[in-house]
Image (cartoon, one colour):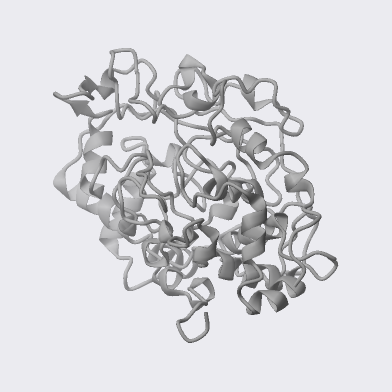
Length: 423
């Protein structure tokens, strides 16, 4: 297999310049992004959310979609078709190559971790840790987000409105310096490793049949993105009840919880809405683009809404005071297996998550993070708190647990293709 050489659009500029623009490398001006032109929209100047609640999005569409591809998507009946970029239409060969790459420890500089090290299938592609740990042992400031339905995300990671494409996001764990994840520093080293496994010769050739040079960094990123777009979860007890009208695991308690979830009393549905239980989605046919972020009153260090460094949300990218503590609302699909919760894993259980929202924000009575989150002037206006009976709480929790998709957590199509006998 011919490795390296012409790398294509992703590397037409320095990998590290791109990472700096995305706020994922050491950047001398980490908050000055107004000069970066990301498509038709300047994210540096946009206010992702209203002054009160942070619910407004961006109607300008910065994503260029592919026109219908022939890939046989396994899309649930109650889901729209996923979005695909024009320069990386999905193919079965590309997905299979991406699956191999996702589980390949060659993608870490010291060969100790793969993408799957922080994104385990049985945990809905999270890792069960409050803070993930990279290949060098460096603890990350945030928890690993679920990759379930990541292909529908309007932007990627917890709070980066600049990071829109899975193709670009793949570079962040590979080469990012803040924090170090997979620890690579040279693109050519990643490319050279693709010749070490004999099976990659056929996999790259099948995935990129028109390319003269195989095993390039762009191809690696494109294949990883293609595989991740297929991680579609939509066969929970709730989904079966919704599409057929009955499911033995979705009874009266779960149905009551669903009603409460969508009530003005609990207000959950405003941020966790639609087929993916998130307001931060984009898909084929959506008439507008929006990527809202929200401050839920998790912290209020100074009485003015401050969050602890380095987890300051969208503020870390834009430097705008209004964006302090704003993070995207993740999907609630498979939420039962994705503990601990919140961007920093600081809430251990779903019961405690309900406590947080019932109080209208978290109170930390002492210590370095002391503060009354419910009094934050930057908190989303929809996080107002509520009184709930024990029966209502049980119902909402039962509904949330009904969103677990057991098939997704064990689907062989998403599993590790490498074995000791066939490395």
